[in-house]
Figure (cartoon, rainbow, N blue to C red):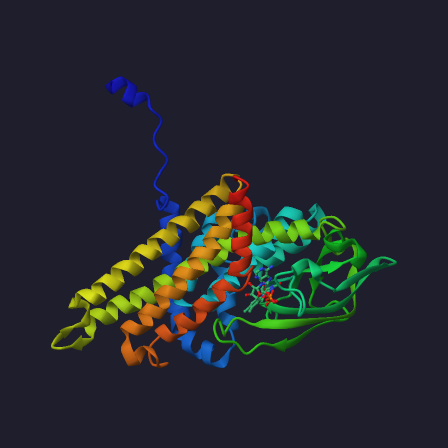
Length: 393
Ligand SMILES: Cc1cc2nc3c(=O)[nH]c(=O)nc-3n(C[C@H](O)[C@H](O)[C@H](O)COP(=O)(O)OP(=O)(O)OC[C@H]3O[C@@H](n4cnc5c(N)ncnc54)[C@H](O)[C@@H]3O)c2cc1C
């Protein structure tokens, strides 16, 4: 019996277990977020502008090229580490979280998987060291129905000439490189969609209106204008007509990133609420001594724990090469619900003060809302989950 037990393989670690390196990685980012991001959060939110010096520090810390191999100047880390970085930054500021998220889970991810050797040599070192990236799929008339996009790419000599407009592009103001989707043949439907690497200085490219938003206000969300924009043929990403595959597959990973952002937002708000509950006195004692408040805190902690397990599990599945499409959609759906519920309740724990800008919880509440919208709305996640689970997958 003892021998049999001794021979049994060690059970897999619990879903929330981190390696020593991952614990260190999180601690470093948490310290950085507290010391450098936290003091700027309110002003960035009010002004709707992300502090450029913070982005420079993200690069210095290696947060903008986490999975990029060291030979290209990246940190040579895992997808799981990208997820931890998004969670830890979002705990303090969801706008910081989405800067890190888009760079790693969408832009670097698309370039790592789909670019050729020359493109890797040219773009990965920039993405890892000083250039913000953006991911441009959506247009005014094509959001959920993303592949109805109308931006046109026509091959003329050695260049593709792009015409059209992109909308809602995160990091649009700061980005130097855009992974951008256009159609080479509108009649071909989704099979005409093609991905390009577009630089902000390419002739015919400009950044248009920046949105004034409810939440993640410091994160820029911009229109992109392409007027006879010349993109060298060598900047085609992947194959002609395979852009839809690039979009679908990168967004699958992106959704786990948004899950991490929502997890960080929920955690951040919850920590503020617990602290406040222990300090704020009514009826002669801290409100945290009322069982009603304790139960709310307990319920939120349970929601956050469930969200964490889903996020970490999906990220580990990705790193081990398993199929994670269903899990990623579930992560995005569930964590955005948790973030909305938790931030709303945290705001209530602060009473009237929670409704003011003197305390940080109203911002978490505003920031949580985007989780149900971008990288596929909740209805789109439900559609994916339904399709897979009803087919027995
Ligand atoms: C702050 C912000 C940042 C963003 N960043 C980026 C970015 O970096 N890059 C990028 O490409 N895009 C980005 N987006 C765009 C985002 O992905 C889209 O807004 C989103 O996919 C929804 O598209 P839509 O706004 O056109 O809404 P619509 O598609 O018009 O949806 C409106 C409503 O209809 C529902 N709906 C639509 N179709 C169906 C259906 N078949 N069944 C059931 N319900 C349906 C939706 O769930 C939603 O409730 C961003 C958006 C925002 C707000």
